Length: 616
Image (spheres, rainbow, N blue to C red):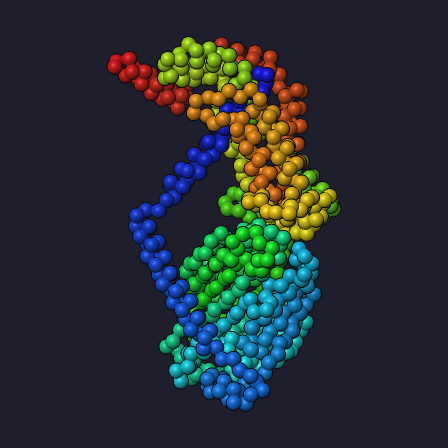
């Protein structure tokens, strides 16, 4: 069973990766001055968030609720809002729609009260709503010169619909006279998710109090769309672009808040759909809050997160002008890339650094191309085959390193017995043997390091690829969600109330892969983990963790491990020749070896340590 040996190189590779990550965290840890600055900033955020929350609660208590059939109530309402009582209160909604999106804008507040996707439905075949039944609020808070503090959501607007070419235009005006008003202007183009939105005032320079702040407040509770609310919530986040095209996010797993300057757009992402507010002129400052509403996998959970943003607006000559865009639509790179000037595609969670780059510019275009002429599940299989074939040279290098180490194992064992009482000498002689044989024990680390960006990029690709949403394959109804072959009458913690088959197949494939690479005869070594335990634990983790994950990801890992097993069998039986490797190593031993600086330094350090030990 010599071939079924301990894969020390793989362990070293993963240890090296973790070591690099730890070093990066250490290098990037904040200085004491930065910690103090962050602490002061957080205290400011908490104070302003508490103040905003308190203010909001007070304002909500003071919100007038009127019966339009009651003349006394209407008179009291007009008295409360002062000059803006010129607009006749009238309930009703105005519809803007094209082939993609349906919007309803209310006379009360002039805001969007319903946003529906016309080409998409949820997992239970209900239309996808981003705004519905009061889950969102858009409010302009301002003061007037007669000492009133008003909110636009409490005002009645007068609607006027017109056309600008093929575009639909809706003007909502809260008037104080026929030619003095606060206007919300919406312009919708055909076959487009982006709606131009402008806030402007006319003739209000003597009405608006320029000495008091004017703020825009946008709230939204994310409506659940997916089967697994916890899985959906994992990819539901508040993302924003600020300063010089920087992208940042609030926490996806807990309550979070932040204050940023020069914010260009805000994205209230709801996994596969997003509500985005973009401004042509960046907001000077934005207070951002995200609250997590998901505690467990409860089928009755209706909302995932609650978002809140507050941005100050600046008067220009006593008037307001803020040109913006609304986007209600899919979190799909193919769609968001159409708005390159706004950079909305950056709101998609491709992953950070090189991982995100590989995901966005390699895997996403590759899968888009394959799925354009292949069934979606087959496209995953073909892409997996291509990835494994491209990575086969790395697999070959890894297996070649194992073969070389196996050839040297008798000599290493002999050195271990010879110097069993002198660990320093044993290490020194072992390094000499490696140098003479032309073998590097660290060569097995490089393949693991090279594959990590690929694995992580694919790990982010499948859960966030809109192209996979509600696409069936075999028994899976939706490749972007988990597959179900059996419903359980109870819920198992961390596992769920169902059984998914693709994670089971992937776990079995991983088990056999580990059997090949680690083997059954795996002696424990001091300082090394128990490989038998890891061999059984890894498939178990896959089985449990991926039961609620995208079935497309489990399909990828299943096919990937099958192909890797096949490639390793071919390498082992038809490419790697142990006799030739042994002969090559013996030939290398006869050649004079020149030490590099690192090897010489290590040898000198060991010799010095050995001399000090003898002197004692």
